[in-house]
Length: 190
Image 1: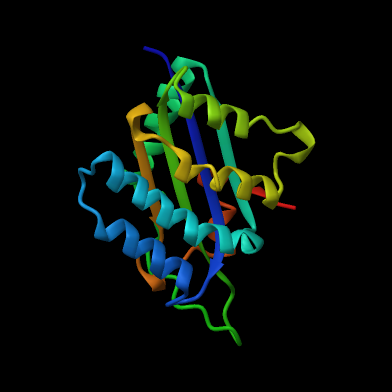
Image 2: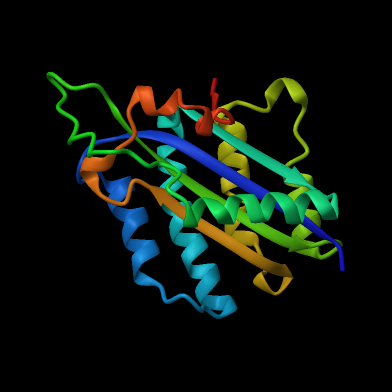
């Protein structure tokens, strides 16, 4: 069996208690580790409903779709490892954003889906991700891809990963954090 991967990460400014961060954290914390196909679809629908209104605020992001089996499996493992390493690790909290004195804080949200090649879901996502090179890093393209998430048939999915950085409000990423080599893949969006 061959695989493809869709991976997407967005970076959005946030303040403690904002609806996007609170909503994403709630969705991730509310569901059990093992979900049926319908439950998984409901989670992706909730995530989409939270992310689409935030698209105008996305400052950086990345996305990939690969239908090379070896690359898909390797990249999926890399994205999954992000859940078990301290990707957004800091030695101390960054503090809650103060709009009058502090520098902005950011969150990142990641979705990675390992798909079975040749399935209708994999083909739909492949088509959705066929974007001309000059348009890759635009917010409308991210919205187009995000809007495809609720159309995933999870019978066509070998594995998926969702994660949010930070979990806690006072550990938001700073401008300096985002210049760290571990975030080199994030691109500024137009």
